Image (cartoon, rainbow, N blue to C red; front, side, top):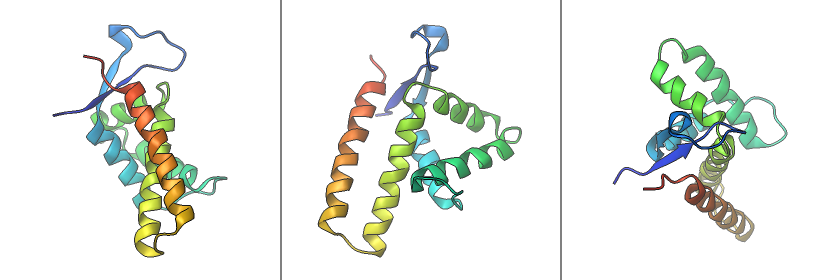
Amino acid sequence: MNFEIELIPISETKKEENTHLLPLSRLEYFAFLATTLTPLDAFMEADGYTSALWEYMQDKKYQEKELFADYDKLIHASNGHTILSTLVQLLLMEKDMRTIGISNELLNRYQRLQGEYQLLLLELKKKS
């Protein structure tokens, strides 16, 4: 089953012509890619990675037009940047759990964030 999320530009009403469907696997790819980059300075760790992804994608916009178009639709959609940032945070926490170990605090934060991610997915899920 190919799970897709509906991306509607910020401050626009959903219409067929402004709705972009993004496979969940593409969102996961962007989040994973962000965690492989050197983060830029930011207040929150995840923002440093999403900012690095933005710069990376600017460099790729002409070579990988389809990938850039999906990214551009994602970050300019209602809750698009939020879901990307949330997934990046989850991936970073998973990395911490593997390298540092699992603590109750980290596990509680992870579970809370996982719940937020699931709510965002439900909100953005393509309505059949």
